[in-house]
Picture 1 (cartoon, helix red, strand yellow):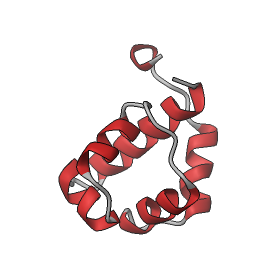
Picture 2 (cartoon, one colour):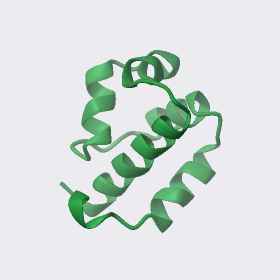
Picture 3 (cartoon, helix red, strand yellow):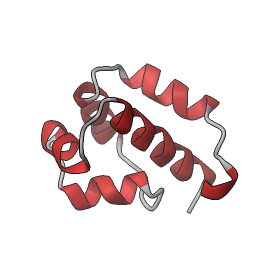
Picture 4 (cartoon, helix red, strand yellow):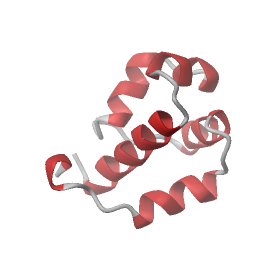
Amino acid sequence: MSDLSKRFGYVLRRKREKADISQEELAERAGLHRNTLGLLERGQGAPTLVVVEKLASALGTTMAKLVGEVERAKLPASAE
């Protein structure tokens, strides 16, 4: 797993939890399978631009803001 994938997953999970929605609900809103979302949150997959756009929209943000958060994210020691 790359550091970038881990940071994306960390930010994605944090934003989903802040929105108080389940993986299943976010996956449905984004038009993704819940297993795909789980893989992304665990940093075990790299999303395409289309998927980043779908997730950003489902979370009520923009691709730029989502990716910006990923760029700035510092993983907690437990997630490294």
